[in-house]
Structure formats: C-alpha cells, structure tokens
Image (cartoon, rainbow, N blue to C red):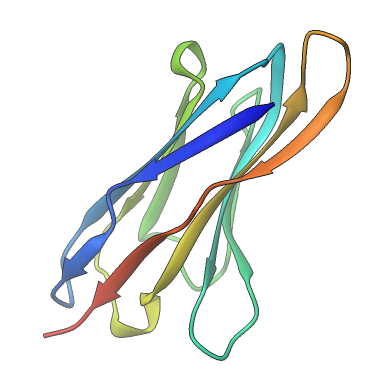
Length: 120
C-alpha cells in the first residue's frame, strides 16, 4: 500500500508564491510518474503538471511559465513551485503517483488534497 502526504497549501495574495510537496511512502519499488491535479469548486479535476521518472515534464497551458514541477527520487517526493499566482489558481491541489511495488504490482495513488486560495 502506498500513502501520499501533501503539504504547502494556504492563502496567498495575487502575484504571490507557494510550494506544494507530496511525499510517497510504503511498498514502493519504482515510481513511473508524479502529477499534480487541481479541482476548483464546480469544476472538473484537471491536470496541472506532470513529471516522469526520467525528468520529462508537461504543464497545462494555463500555468506554463508560472509553475514548476520537480521531484526528489531519493525521497519519493514531488514538488510544485507556483509563482505569479492568480485568483483563478484557487483550488484543491492533489498529487497522483504511479509506479510498482516489490511484487510487481502497478499502483496509482492520490493524495488527500491541499487547499490553495489566491485572494487579496
């Protein structure tokens, strides 16, 4: 079983910055990909950014140039640095981690979510 713990959300003024973290623990043999999603009230969950085991990244058009995803493979942790935040970035942010355990079983786990509110 794989457990994810997210941290770093909060209230920030427009133009401000936050860094989210998501640490994975448990029976992890290999992590293939780590992604950040967000869900605003009344909207569907959307992919914000993703990073593969090789370090390739992808971003939603709405956050390109403002958000940076990174990972620490030794710590099984993924980060999301968010700069120049806008009110429309307000949402609950979730991490998603996909990989395999020591028995070769593939897993996909979600974090509990962390609230990001951008408001003056």
